[in-house]
Length: 207
Length: 207
DNA sequence: ATAATTACCATACATTTGTATGTTAACTTA
DNA sequence: TAAGTTAACATACAAATGTATGGTAATTAT
Image (cartoon, rainbow over all chains, first blue to last red; front, side):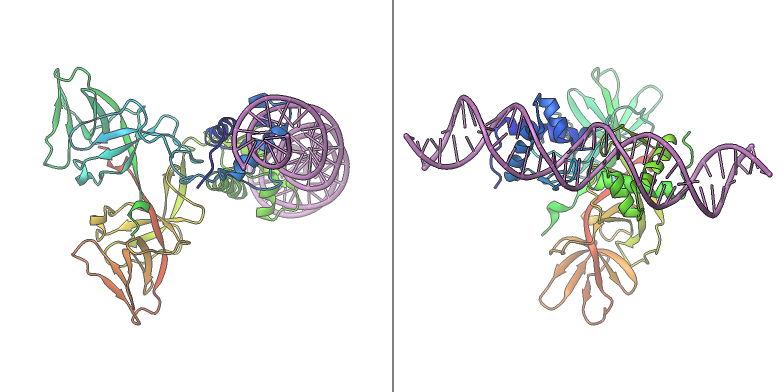
């Protein structure tokens, strides 16, 4: 039931979100004025009032930087979910974010990590299920037994990683899916990153 | 290579982390002074200087709320785990924290929530497993079908909640455990909170 | 024994900050 | 045409804020 923001108001809100999730603290009126080249704070003040009136932020009176985002999931993912990744058979990764709509948040992610939503059940014996969000760190060396995200032929999979003498194996824990052995047949094979954690929200399951 | 903080400095740093993660904005000197009962801001000012000198925070001069955390994994906040809770048969809750977990800040972690580590497998069909960390919010009204933490006879359980006409049922999804029906026999029954999310770190499983 | 650190307090001050109030102009809507 | 919204400006002010300086007492290290 929120009213539409004007283009300028949206720019300002975007800047707010950017600052809050990037720098960790909301900007002051002066900060915003400086960024947009306004010559005084009252201009920003009025924009804030308009944005607040439309319900996108909430201001704490008299409090410096007292701006809160009222967006849903404000504790949630600051970054888009980059795609869906198959725990069973490979799925294509979408070039752009698949969930760009409601990602604004206050919370932060490790800068070098990103999120993927898992589809498929090949890792169900590792307790990762369809719909879970996996946190992927691309800057770690995979060790045997770790769960990794890999790309094969333009598709992505989540599998357990094992380095053998002459090849690499990507194993599912679900016996319905067979282990993928990486050799010459996979010229575009690449380890995208290591799954360092999973997160699952319970909210959808409320009855 | 960071120097040790004193107990008070650690308390203040914890408060900073809590505010930044929870409320989204760092507190002012006055906020901190008020919280700890100090009569003026200069006391906090000096503590900040000490904490900064030891390398745990960085301050932006002259900037209100210009405090940044310099912690290594500043995106993984150590949170106390208050106890273990049975997904199968009840287990006692420990009075103090039994451990800490580094929770990624993407996880929804409102200030009023706390963490429990799950033991037992009675909820394995709800995809919650022994060892998982559940995020519990004590300030929400349970709805049918939600997973709750409850206390029965000084022990805690994680079960799915169903309110019937005259009684409350706590169901496991694993048929090995039977549903608990709450009636007069449980005078000390109490809903502790609602499970709003789960988190599982992969680090232990590295081979 | 002396110096350094920690922990708190008090006072003072320049800026920063949010807010209030008016003004002007362009554009939309009734 | 009149009224409302949007968008920018200027000025003014009280409160909030960070900072500087100095003091006292207890504890810890040298």
